[in-house]
Amino acid sequence: MIVGREKPYLVRYHSYSLDIRNYRRYLRSRRNYYIAKRIFDIVFSALVIVFILSWLIPVIALCVKLSSRGPVFFVQKRVGYLGKTFHCLKFRTMRVNALADKLAARENDSRITRIGRFLRTTNLDELPQFFNVLMGDMSIVGPRPHMHADCHKFSRYVENYKFRNLIKPGITGLAQVKGYRGPANTFEDIFHRFQYDAFYVRNANFGLDIRIIRKTFAQTIYFIIGKVVGRDDLQEVVQKKKIYRRFAFSIKQVLN
Image 1 (cartoon, rainbow, N blue to C red):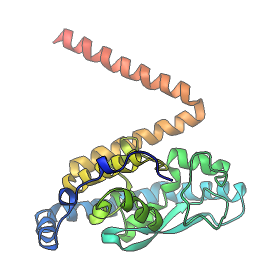
Image 2: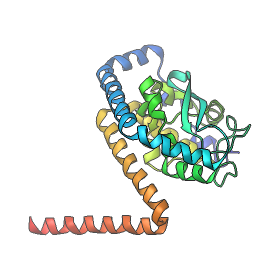
Image 3: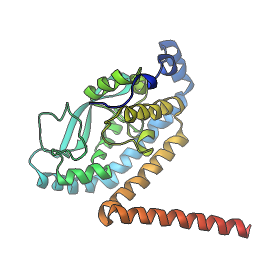
């Protein structure tokens, strides 16, 4: 159930809609960017598959199999580019259950296995989606793909929510690096994610993609370290790093 205020925050149709003529003009104006983006997706995903997933998949697969009975991968129909359905790959993080395609995972969900919780927290469960990128169903950067049930549900709360489908879904996106990841339990969560997704659709560029990838990589490393050394210790490390940066900047200012 979505809680929170609704009507005052509805996105007006004219703010995020594009008719067919304008959309074709929009695609033509960004043709070079989309070509470069696709080339980057192919090269980047191929490198990740060859040099990382080639040895990491067997390791995670063994952990998943030991955690509970069922397949290593979870394949789910998701909403893709222009609303088309594609089969999204993930490492299985839940015990096999009948509600997997209808009910999204919640915080402290009893269906999630112990290794699955680690994979979700660190976002390692999304790694198989590099195969989706290589096949052309997804991009490295873009709005996260939803289950059809969630897409229809969110569309009832945010007007013209499917505007975000005008670009290929991504493994990571602007909303995710801004902290909007995991289950969306309130209207504010849904609306703010849509705001960031809509901003990305309108303003996507190669520089923004690189910044999102860099931020995602940094967050993933921090999440992994946080699970190993403890979240409190991780926050202390991050805080010390920020203090060191401010100190170094102050010294540089004095020297200049």
